[in-house]
Length: 443
Image (cartoon, rainbow, N blue to C red):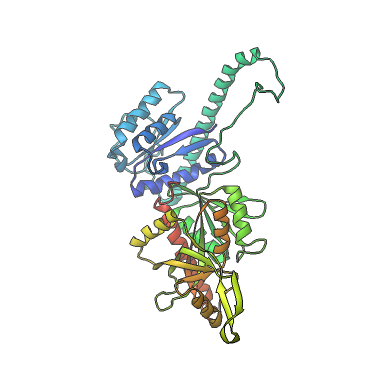
């Protein structure tokens, strides 16, 4: 059983960004199941906030008090501070308080001011240069690891001492009998002990998409980029972004084939058990009169244009009737992206029907057929149909978010590298901003 850790932190954007950086450095302890950390953004909608805060804090053995001006005026702070102190005073060997100076504030008269404040230098994490802050966060991770290991050893020793007398009185029984001694590990949310926590899985299909997600995540959201090798695919742990444990995987182009989106996403969902899957990357636009290169396309609906009935129409002309589903993306994910769209001042987001198929579209005749097939479509791409099919079977929320790199009209090669780079970065930035604002932390 993991040692439970509680983050006592304000809800201000500045404090939440620093909290995410702390959680990234503590992430390896979570993956190793040494700790189970929790913070208020994980409260599920509809749950009583005060009751959940009190319950979680009362269960914690390590309480990180993230000091800042916003925490000291948070309406829940006085009662949570009092409860934390009571838990520590009642069981000082079991419950440990770790004050961390996020930002400069007047904490000198707080009841735990006499404890060792991290960082030891006395400077706040906020005022440190990025490289120095990372060094301090690494030290904090080492400190929390040592404390969690000590608490786990004490717990195991107490359990062993308590079990020894009873064990001597119990006769040995075969492993198949009802009364046999057994160890049962309760696993929540359908995960197994070897399954890392994954709230959101990001999926890309090309080098330019992969690099864009990595660079925006690392440079703008201070994410990690830790490799974990699966049976076939390589998975990349980005850490917690906005309270959501975020992973990244790359498929091959298209939905079909042994490395295509269908099989690669299926294996990723089986291994990581994400709550949401987001395809992020580049697409072609279908409305050059309303759109610009670099604009963002969000799949309110998605239709595979490959399933078709091809027959003979009037005058012997070929008649093509589309038979693909029109699947609606996850309402929750769609809402989060629409919410960001209200404030977004960069590349314009468009919400509507996306077409998906195996063809790399770059010919006016094919483009016209697609427009005739779905006049309301806003763009098209190659992997979304595979992602949607797997996500639906696995009961996983999904959406496709891509940006326009060309118009599919035969001019794809013109300024191709720059157009694809800009589109991939725009899509990655839009997706990661939704994550960073905490919009996907309540799964």
